[in-house]
Length: 115
Length: 109
Image (cartoon, rainbow over all chains, first blue to last red; front, side):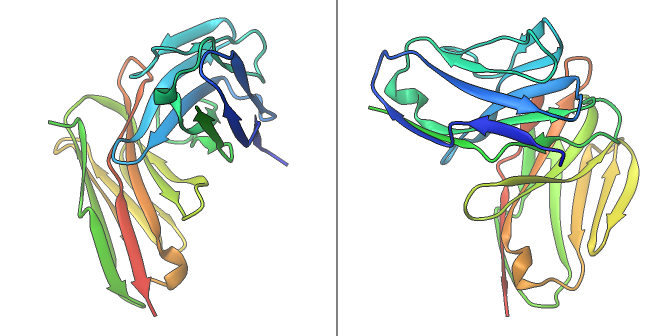
């Protein structure tokens, strides 16, 4: 089954404790992206990757790191989490973000609470 | 001014009604996306389009590149269509994605 898998689904942690949210897709997609969703602010892009070893900043990259060493995986790293990073996070993938025929596939989301 | 705007912000309809949600954007794009998010959080991509019109079941999406405007139509609406509908654009040349604020739709039986 074609899917984007995020882990964990829920996490409560404390300020400053490094954490990684994993994202994996099994569709051989080139494009992968991380988004966060906050009440009143909607969805915003954190980082995206057009292919292996190619990553770019979205609108809200501060406090986050990503890597794309393999095509299928795109982990989101919070080196020193802070309470303002409490949010609902989505990973997504697509064959391409250009043209009109390659819709994004979204993971189920990761609800992150940082105390 | 936001680069992607949607109207209306909230919409309540009777079952069976024809529904239109609008999206306008102010940047050059390579594609426009319509997404659906039900209560509980999961996001589903409904359409990705760069020109013309697409239809899937009771859903129709259109885009007018010259006017920088897209519409999502739902025919014969049903309570299961109740969700937040989000317009997003892939910015031309950058592959960055920018989202609209969403339209919350409630279809009453």
